[in-house]
Amino acid sequence: MASRRAGAQLRAVDTHRPPVRGTRTARASRCTPTRTQPPAELNGTGHAALERYAADLAAGMLPSVRRIRREMHLGQPRAQQVQAYLADLART
Image 1 (cartoon, rainbow, N blue to C red):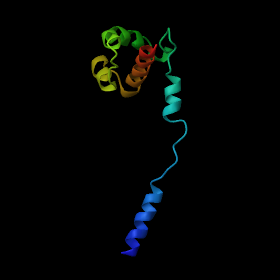
Image 2 (cartoon, helix red, strand yellow):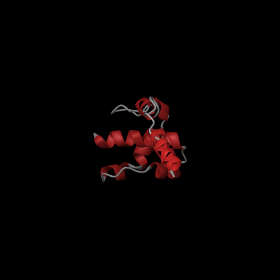
Image 3 (cartoon, rainbow, N blue to C red):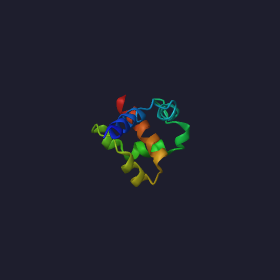
Image 4 (cartoon, helix red, strand yellow):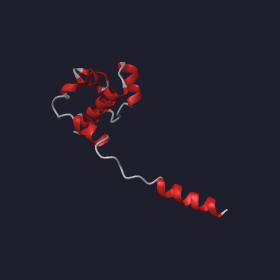
């Protein structure tokens, strides 16, 4: 029984890991759009998304990444960039 408790304590200590630097924050900073133009890496997808989701943004709703992927036929990283661009526009 004592060995189980010791193992549980070790597992509890081992599960605490410091955050990894530069994973999400670096990715988010690269796709942070300017207020007037979408990022160049969106290659026109930002304008198309703005036209497609203008009514949602006007109503105060942000489309989900899953919806952007499904309706615009994009992969996960590009859909996340598009959502970040739309979120920035909605804040302004």
